[in-house]
Every structure is written in structure tokens, then in C-alpha cells.
Image (cartoon, rainbow, N blue to C red):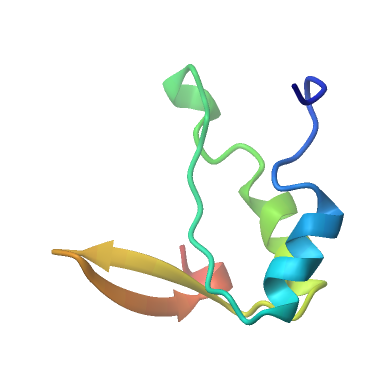
Length: 71
């Protein structure tokens, strides 16, 4: 079990995913509508610091890469 408030994936694991060239998509675990996207800027900063510049979006099972700050 992970501590409350800890990001997932943890930074060390995130570093390994980036090193392997994986693409990323994001989601929210918000339990109230007003909290959806609340920390999107922090997430973008975290990914940019590791060289991630794109996120994957999906429509009809087709992946499209978009600039990290476009969403």
C-alpha cells in the first residue's frame, strides 16, 4: 500500500519508464468534479523535467501524440 498523497508512479519508477521510451497518458483520480485536473501543471512540470514533451490520447483505439501542454 502506498502512503496517502504519494504520486504514482513513484519518481524512480517514472525515470525507468522514460528511459525505456514509453509514451504517457494521464488521468484523474478526483472524487469531485471541481478537483479534476487540479494538479495538471505539477504533472506537466514533472514530466518535462524528465524530457517528456508529448502525451498519448486515444480515439477509436487509435493513438495520437499531442504536445504535453496542449491539454
